[in-house]
Image 1 (cartoon, protein in one colour):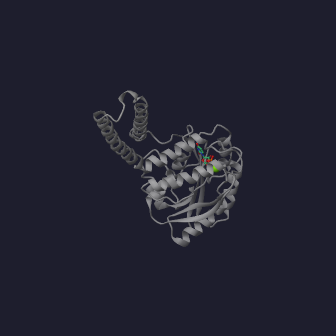
Image 2: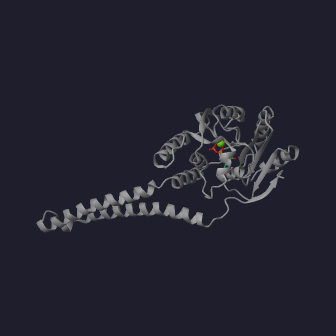
Image 3: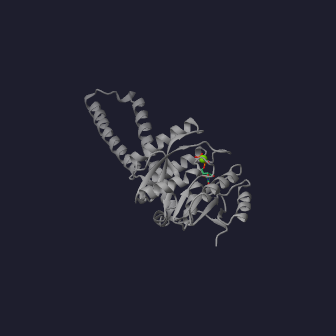
Length: 312
Ligand code: UDP
Ligand code: MG
């Protein structure tokens, strides 16, 4: 007998939110739990998501709402959910029903069977997703694994079950740029996979346009890897070696007369462009890390809660 929280980040989910609530409710009611609650985080929705949630919360005390002052992003929303969670277990799930809530009892069963601290859901199949997104996600997770200091499970989203030990450890993370699935892997303890088929979005459209996808990928890469800095160093080193050989070639050419100094315009342009590019690239890599330092030292809160509904 356990207590369970379901954490559901919501941003403009008006067309699905009621169905999501009812499907999760049915699942929770069918389970043998001491108590359960649903934590909906309204991440600055511009539609009627909050109104619908407030209506539900009035009738159902087990529905808790964390209402943000504006849109802070998916990862901040999930973070707020975990911060407010005090139960034995939490399940993180998207509001759009791509991750079937009906799997929650199976996740708990898997947890009990393996005595695991984390049961992370691995997508065997993803339907209703653009070819580009599938390709980009596949490349991204594999590249990240190669360059990061942690070994992440592949094809895994935030849909997972975590226990109180993980919840407590997660609350200690001070960094504001959160790549949650990575941080949970990083924590360690016993983490086991659960294979499932990811469905298409129930209604509405994706809240992850290319811009958000890129920012998400950037956080994951630069927060979990120092390899780009190392690559900048090796790139600089390589070009210095090339530069030395070229300098010698031109110097001896001048002395022994096998190069024609007057006709050197093309080679100079090529060298200027090449080295200019490499310099800008490495400055850009440095800039990414400085930008992250800049954001982190400000120690701004990760999210601002406007109000809490049904929290004692
Ligand atoms: N979401 C959020 N804030 C955002 C963007 C998304 O809380 O700024 C929520 C969204 O409501 C959904 C989950 O995060 O519950 C995943 O978003 P979505 O399904 O649009 O992403 P996709 O599945 O297309 O990658
Ligand atoms: Mg989705």
